[in-house]
Image (tube, rainbow, N blue to C red; front, side):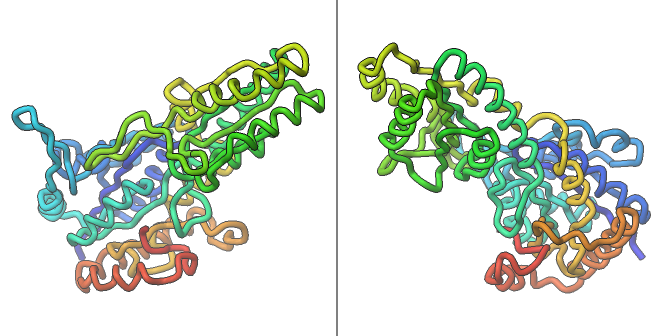
Length: 394
């Protein structure tokens, strides 16, 4: 029987726990005698095969605690729409057929794609072209359907909470209003979780458009109560009622918009609206102060570092569980998911690794024989999002 040949990639932004997943996948497969290759720089390694590297016991030794990804990552290498500049003109070209051809020519049986919404959207496109794929949900934003938590999120919240905690003493000492912008794109999980953990006085998230009047009322109420400082936490995608998200760079074909700058706008607005009332109440106790997460250093810190607490085990588990509960999951649009509390009735790690690769082997081999992936994909995407630990890619 042919030895199973797997490829692993990490796409999109980096997140704590990536290396733990790569290591877990590699060890689980190698212990069964299979070959594992890493695709460097996201999906670009499928176009430039020199970016494919074999993963061995030595190459993944001692990487669990490291931040980033040993494979590198890329959020602009989409084979379904790669950026090309010709004669000074920029356009986007679909080169996915070349990626599929290289995949087959090199004899791979499947890809384990570790990524967020953008990377897994690419995975769906490649799957529809015939590449068997298992998705592992990775994003600090925690904005993927069909999973209670993505790895990277827990660490991002811990980092943001620590930053908010440190701002409290400065805000209180200088009697300032601190406006803290955190990442999350179109989702407010980081802002909500870190804001609550850090005792923020106002939390603004994209899901609930805010009224600046209400924010200022809260600040003035604290001032009247003798609390001469406030902490306002806002997600980068937060927007006022009837307004739009603040954009640093507009979106283009093949490239999403870059959000950011809402903290600075909020700080200016809060200063203008509270300066006179505070002056009438006594010595000015508030000053405009925006502690921007983007574009300053706090934004990349949200992604960096090792995965502490729950993030580390979650990353290891995410690497050990692809297709654990469905022999037909590989190549059919499924991804590993965290089902929340109470899901822990699993074998020990060694047994789980053996269980994973046994299922993985069957899954990839069946996907080669059975085909009809697109028909399955249409039916799978119509199922209940929370019905299975290995839910369809979204």
